[in-house]
Image 1 (cartoon, rainbow, N blue to C red):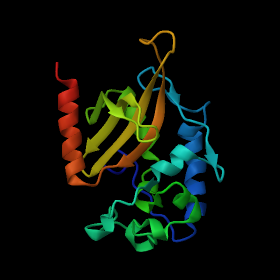
Image 2 (image 1 turned 30 degrees about the horizontal axis):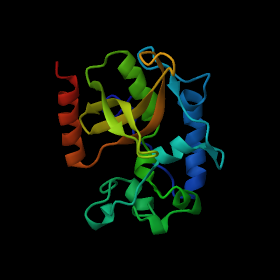
Image 3 (image 1 turned 45 degrees about the horizontal axis):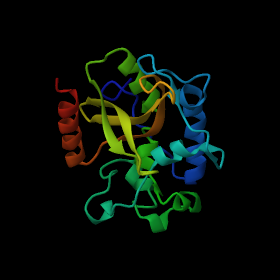
Length: 208
């Protein structure tokens, strides 16, 4: 562990983004995506939908990409990062590869360089690490517009700020029984306002 308690963000060599994604996918598969290797979160089983695109889980592809929110008009997530040197898309959907364009997202080396943090953060959550915050709140799911309970796990220490988001899946016959935590996404926080909003959300949702 070299980066505020987490592994150092990877310096990804310039090359085909899909080759880089597949390489990191094979590593994350062994520590998180594979059902047999997948950890639990404080005793709750984690579910990852088995939608495969180009040999990779769709939720993985979602986590290493971002929606075109016009970041390039202000500041790129990878500004002052080595990832910015090799970044081709510059957060623009029009520059994305075909696979990511189908998902209406743009691939992100900044996110990809930190994707290995998922199992590390879950491990810290299970150990009640001092830099971990966990809370739940009800939100509309972006994929189907249904209201769901979301479980959020955030690690914040120095320059390392990373969040993992799950949907809570309950038993159809026993609404109080949590069956799984459905993995939706994971990414580093880089917008200051998003960090502030998450801080406020945590306080609101954990207030007794």
